[in-house]
Image 1 (tube, rainbow, N blue to C red):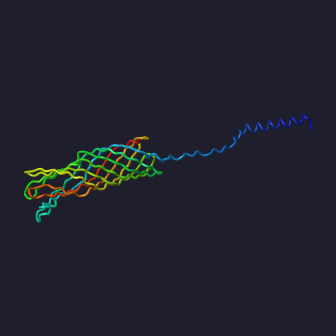
Image 2: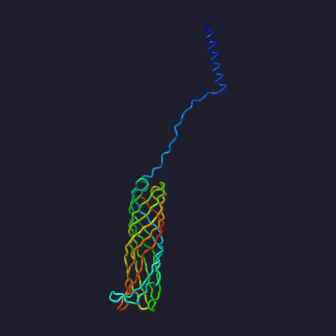
Image 3: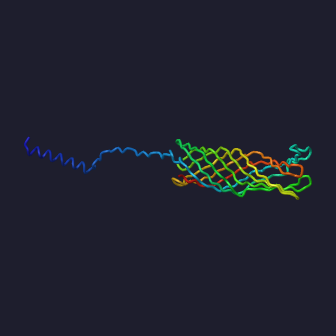
Amino acid sequence: MSIRTTLSVCTAALALGAGSALAGGVIAPVVEVAPIEVAPVSVAGAWQGAYAGGSLGYIFGADDVVGIVPTLDGVPIEGRRALNLGDLDVSGATAAVHVGYRWQRDRWVFGPELGVEVGSVDADLASTFEGGDFELEAEMQNIVTLVMKTGYSVDPQTLVYGTFGVARGNFDYTATTLTDSQSDSITATGVAAGLGVERAMNDRVSVFAEYQYRDLGNEQISYEDGAETLESATSTAHSSIKLGANFKF
């Protein structure tokens, strides 16, 4: 075959290939793109650390039944007692401050919290005992709580928790009759338990809502009535709701 014939065959082949490319288009090579994996948001340590906060709340649900038992030399006088003079429903608005520390393991959060609560929490009961008017007033001075908070982070910003610990309350009681008025103070200690939810607004500030029940037991309050002593039995159990904010250090 001559050189001219060889060049003609090559030229024809190139022309045919070019025509096929123009007619059918260029087939681009298939490139496999690896899927984009989104790393899960880590919650480790989001709640851990020291914090302080404050709250506004309301105490309610005391519903304490007051009874009177006259005693002589510390011995109840038979036939002279009133076991149900009425209910002493201590309630009112409160303000509280607290400090605490939390550890976090995966989604579980736990740690101690110390709080102090004051407010306008009181009640009064007017009744009649042995033909005379009798009035009993109660007023809360403060309540100190030390609880362990244990919670679960349902997402990076939301924590649900429970509390359990001790509560110590100071209360003033005043008994008034037509001829006399006497006051007594008591300090009662008992258990505190509750539930709450907390929502992080940013890295340092969170808001919360909490319910807590405190049972500080029954207390005996003594009032002198001439040669006798009146023993008043009352309970310091109640419920509390709070709305507040925490500030992480």
